[in-house]
Image (tube, rainbow, N blue to C red; front, top):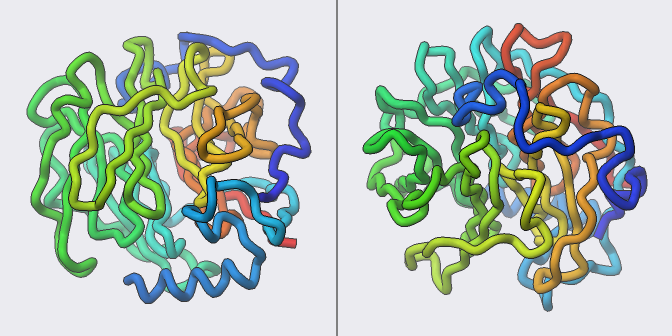
Length: 331
């Protein structure tokens, strides 16, 4: 697989202090700061770029000899067409890289939205509300399945505790329906920050610690897509402090990206493992992404590994969290 850790130290970068809690504004609240045809086209691109996560089910998930080598991340740039003067966060990019699903306060309430672009180089079009998922309560983030016929999202509807919900549709042109709350997932604490793997058989999510929107990253698997996910277990190698959350993985399952509280604010980290049956190793800041004194959260990476989306509050933000993207080349 690609060596994305070449710029990082052996452990969390010197000069950073990991923190359980801190005065980070909305960061320490319950997140109220908190067609498959296209996929085949994407797979052709992945072949041309090497083999970054191309075969997530091959062998034990070990690296491939013809993996894509990446250059460094470029300077993150604000995405003006997605951002507003309200808090915008909780986003994930679709498998084909053309649809961005996210949460925003732009309506005056925490609601879920999406926006599409015709090509990877184009700007995103109009922001559209996912009206069948939005309630008078707070929806805080959303994760699409690989075919975008399912979504996993968090909401305080039904009960005050944020919990994972699932919704589905039979066609991407239709609205989501068949909404189900994963009651067992939030029986002891808020369950948030879902991410589903390319085969739609493994679900990662965050069980909040009660000291902020992060906590423990859990994972659960199922044998078939029609089966129900059961309550997850901690991801091996990422247990314990600092609190972590809102994970996404590369298609080969060997690199995980997530947020963690540093010096009282969230920033973005990564960890790698040798195979999908191995524990994750050292936690490192994502090189070139974090900005000193700036919140960074809700990371999402395209399947080909060349675009990294996240929310951040920076000097060029609107005064609230905005969306940013960093790009790198497949060498």
